[in-house]
Amino acid sequence: MEKVVVSFGDALLRSSDVALLDPPHWLNDNIIGFTFEFLSSSLPPLQAQQVSFLSPEVSQFIKCCGNEASDFLEPLDLPSKELVLIPVNDNTGPEAGGTHWSLLAYVRRYTVFLHYDSSPGTNAPHARLMAKNLDVLLGGKQNYREEDAPVQHNSYDCGMYVVCVAEALSEQHLHGHDSMFLRNITPQFVTQKRVKWKEIIKGLSCKSLSHNLQV
Image (cartoon, rainbow, N blue to C red; front, side, top):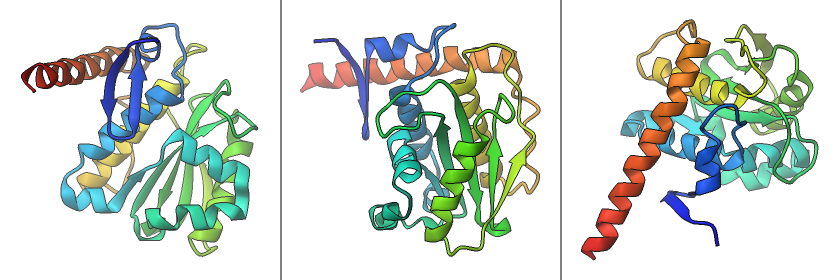
């Protein structure tokens, strides 16, 4: 069986998942799920109550199951969140897969869904469907808007742009910024983030191995 590199919260990464952080690979559900889990766990306590990072599995369920998702999502208490970050995939089925990632953000103070797509227009139908399904849970008063987003310059970095934009929006919420500027997310920045996430995973893996050796 393939080696497990790290287990973190609800996320589990194998060596083939971690290898996707090397260009020119697309990120899969497992890597994005891990990064969202890690970012969520890194939030200060107060912000952790205000911000929700949804996993790719949950977001795909929202898109595919429509109104049926409401009961399933109730324990997440999304109506109380100030910011909800949702990865969007162009896959039309319930299983993992697809060829393009983008990010949908619900911002409570503005009662709006903001869609950030590094390949503008590609995932708009999927994001709109997801927003429509979530709107029922959030009271049916939300607007939807396509936002200017950092644009990928290759065919494989869409998932990394999702991770980078989600992290930036979370940080801006933490510091109370109203304007969500994403100018720092350049192609070079995204490439560096691939390396950074590999370092984070390596650190967690070494820490876990050290703990197991001490037990």
